[in-house]
Length: 409
Ligand SMILES: O=C(O)C1=C[C@@H](OP(=O)(O)O)[C@@H](O)[C@H](O)C1
Ligand SMILES: C=C(OP(=O)(O)O)C(=O)O
Image (tube, rainbow, N blue to C red; front, side, top):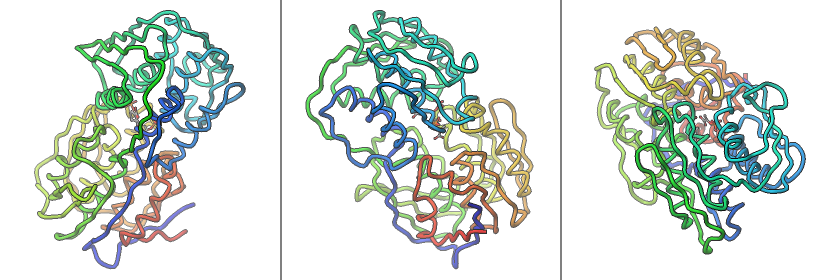
């Protein structure tokens, strides 16, 4: 589906949006619910990624296809490997077959797991014969993806003696590891994270508990971008968010002050207000702890004609697409001057935005959602706009609530 986006009637935006539950929290809690049957979960994400995670957890024998869902692939690998009697082939989309998994497979094999590669060494699909894992200490690189670490941590309570992880190298996407530990703590699992070592105690059962998933902060980033690109006085209410969030992307509240957007908390949510014009200085950010909002920030900067230098982006090339290369290609299409390295993206200040260009989305929900706010400044086309359902199926419906109409082209 190709959508043509055009500016709303007025760039003074006033709206209230209820955003779906965090995809990251949801996929963690679904796995923990499979280990601790009496957990109840509310405000679950309605994303494709949550759906494939739920479906996968219900399969004991046969093929499990997680499509594009990275956390489902990584989290289910440890789950199946440590569940005696599970015999599965864990596969995904063509892109998923290019997203490396050897760090996790090697760690699980060191713990005694039985895993083999079905096609290419180091990549999905993988054949897993679940078994009781005897060992409980393992080292693994921490600078490639935090998901490998979260995967082992989530499964750790079901191991006979818990688990001790020694993390090698610079730890990336740290807030996601802390989210995992925070949720383990919430269900009563004892954990300790000191230096480069994480310990998780074994736990066979948990008390009945209702866990409420906070709405998705990465999804909130697109409304921050809209607020930044809109007129002074715009006000957008989003729910349901809280101040002491487990999500690292809540750093948006600080980052978007640079663009004149203030955040206030209240009524089980946040209100974004455009209170000032943007700071015209180049925005320098190190985003290794919030990789998923890099695309949003780059487009906001471009839409305001501002320069930015975003680094700490070394994980972007192995996500849904090579996000650095994709962002360079698509931003240059609309007139940006972009420089990328293997871990950074820099934008020169710009004056013109080329209108009615067709933005490719590369099977990446965040390519579609990051570019959508640019419609406040110029008409543009979004190709394969349905990709948003990976994390935010109601995205285009909510864009219409904001006044941003997408017409099928
Ligand atoms: O653990 C998680 O829920 C996630 C971790 C991050 O991946 P990396 O740790 O590979 O950066 C992030 O990009 C992804 O959207 C979700
Ligand atoms: C990278 C992402 O997800 P995953 O790694 O789970 O596919 C994302 O949602 O931006």
